[in-house]
Image 1 (tube, rainbow, N blue to C red):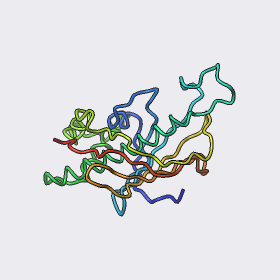
Image 2: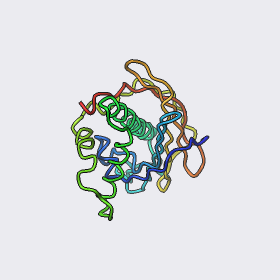
Image 3: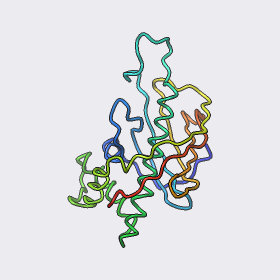
Image 4: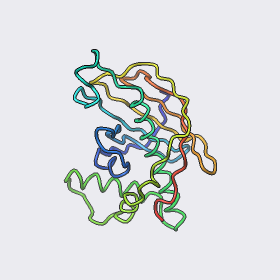
Length: 201
């Protein structure tokens, strides 16, 4: 992975669950590691794979491996979070607010979920409530993928996702994805998702 520089933005699973409608065991992103808006919107995220996952059945052959359909779902979920970042920041600017309010709201929510000092009640609450209420509008349906899976993923591995928005049309956004485990590429390629819009409306 030719890593794109992103601003460090360590956000835990509670914030991921705020952004995505999926829930365990099909929530395939644990953390947001970083995000940058320019020069190209890029998100880094991760997922630790445990042998206790319900999709690792005792009846399956050993060693257990992460099904590639689930690896693809994790990539789509990471791309969907990037879509939400892009959409909400654009919508904030469209109504005369600062795009950085989204990141501030998410950081504050993470501090609150962890019961750490520094939490500011009410900060960005309207933004977070709008994301939660957006429902289907915050989920981009996959239109196409050209992803190559180069290695298998096993329990104990940590998937590192890097997702970049490379171009967009009226209704579709196109992403590049690189996924690594311990510095080795396990999947890479492109995917297209229907555009996410209207979250704050």
